[in-house]
Length: 111
Image (cartoon, rainbow, N blue to C red; front, side):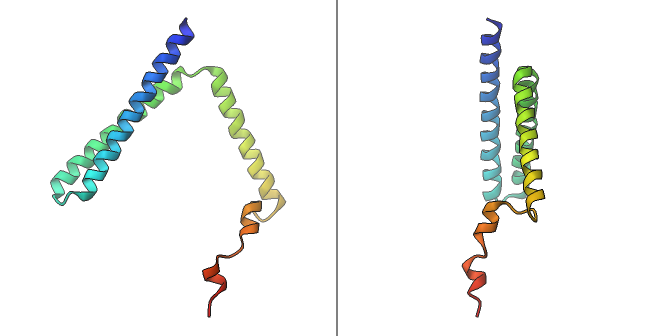
């Protein structure tokens, strides 16, 4: 029962984070098109408040997460680091995709 309660509260926190992110995007979009400098500053300050609220919600989510989930996330990050180090050791730091791409046409077709 406790696990279901944690899942539902985390779900609600995620929804609140999404709401704050959408509000921030809306405010920054409005600030971009506003010609009044004072109004623009007010909108940007409100957007900054949304960022603080999102960060607070995210901290709550992170504190509730299961230790198993945290361990899995850490293991995945460590695996990515090992892969990146292996790729760096194998070549000059470029991945296989970068080696195959070559130069874009606009660089090779110079006159």
